[in-house]
Image (cartoon, rainbow, N blue to C red; front, side):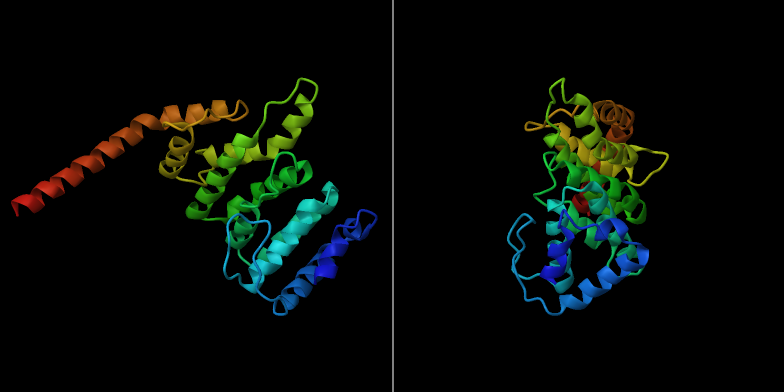
Length: 242
C-alpha cells in the first residue's frame, strides 16, 4: 500500500490528472482492503502521541501525508475529492476526514498548495457536518488564522489567493443565514481566541466579519449569561432554604 501511495506523489505521472470518478472509487477500495494488513504505528503528521490507531486512521494518515507533499494542485484537489467519494459510499464519515486533515502539522500557509486545497475541500464538507463537528472545524480554522503572516507588498495578491479559501470558510461559518453553527458556540470560540489576557486580534482578512458578529451577539449573550446566573442563584437559594 505504501508503494501505491508513493506513486501518487510522482511529479512526472499524469495518472491522477486522467483519473475519473470510477478510478477514484477503485483507489479507496484498494486502500481500505489494505488497511487490515497494516500494523499499528504512531502517526508522524498529527500532533501528539497516539498509543493505538485503528486501520482506517492509519490509511487516512498515510494518505494525507502523501497528499500534503504534492505540489501539483490538480492532483491534490482530485485526491481530496476522492475523500468525498469515500464519504458518499460510506467508507468513512465526514468527521473522520476532518480529524485526519485539520490537526496536521503540514497544514500551514507556507505549504501553499495543500493549505489552499484543504480549505477549498472543507468549504463543501462543512455542509455535511453537525453543529458539534462544525464547531471543531471553526475552532481549528480560527487557530490557523494566526498563521496568516503579513505579506510584503510584492506578494500581497498571491498571499490573498492562498488564504482566501480559509477566509471564506470562516465567513461561511459566521453567516447567520447559512446557520451551520449556533451563535452561542461561535461566540465562545471567538471570545476564547480574541478576548482575554492572552488573546490576539483577528487577522485583517477576517477582522470585519469577526467584529461585526461579536458586536451583534454581545448583548443577547450577556442577557443569556445573566439569566442563567439568576437561575443558578435561585436554585442555590432554594436548595439552601430547603
